Image (tube, rainbow, N blue to C red; front, top):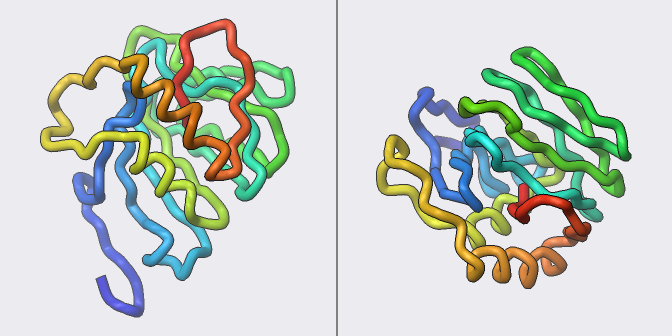
Length: 164
């Protein structure tokens, strides 16, 4: 990395287990002067995020593989490879991998900063090929406690909580 840009190969980046999913950060706040952060997320079957609202940032998603169900302001759709989703701040949204195979997507967060939340609630990854560690009640309680510090409102869900 230098002041003129950044080049990462497919397996490069900083990876964390975040509530059952694998987040690999391709850019962080310091890489883009706070403009945006980019993460690659592997969403495992039956995991994802609870309904939530961002008060500080917009999120954009680009599905690379698999199928991910998105709910945005009460509308549900299944996103397949090549699908792009934009969710501005203030909009209620969630995503879930309802299939039996992992799905992969890119997530841009504008402006940057939310990656610090994921790093704070997550666990650094030693081996990305290892199975995801189980989500514990402690993980969930930490997520609920820290979300407001990052401008996130977590909403009630009819499924187990995880947060993205």
